[in-house]
Length: 145
Image 1 (spheres, rainbow, N blue to C red):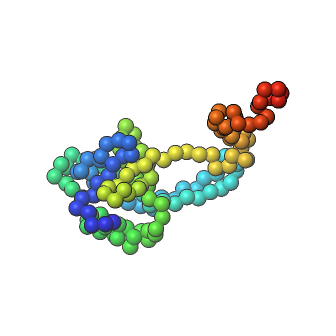
Image 2 (spheres, rainbow, N blue to C red):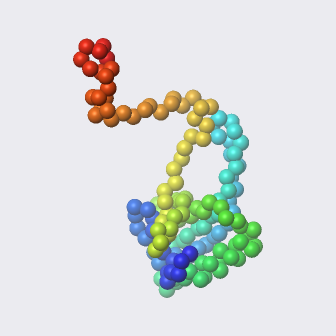
Image 3 (cartoon, helix red, strand yellow):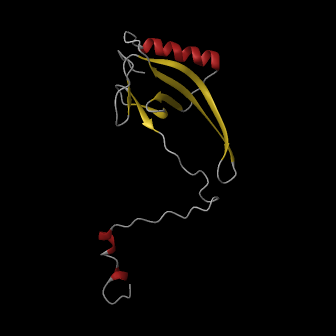
């Protein structure tokens, strides 16, 4: 973390997390699951939970956040891994974490099929620009296209 005066989080495409947030949990989350193709998988991530409290005088400074991270590394054996953040919106949201040089960005997570070949999904259709078709010789008048 560069020399920052404040720890600031922003939801990508949305609002800033109020400055009086608390880090209420830090942990290593392990998830074992079976994908739709029958493959057993395991994912791990370091998870931070942010909570918007009514403590308007509270401001988490960078040094305090580094102390929290150091304590978690020592006590929980955390290693460099994917970091995700839980933050309360209309419901608890899980976000990927990025940094833009000034503040942290909570980036939306997405779902995906992990076994498209095993679960019968059709291959994605190839997208073609109409302008590219106009140059194709197979589609000229009289070419039976």
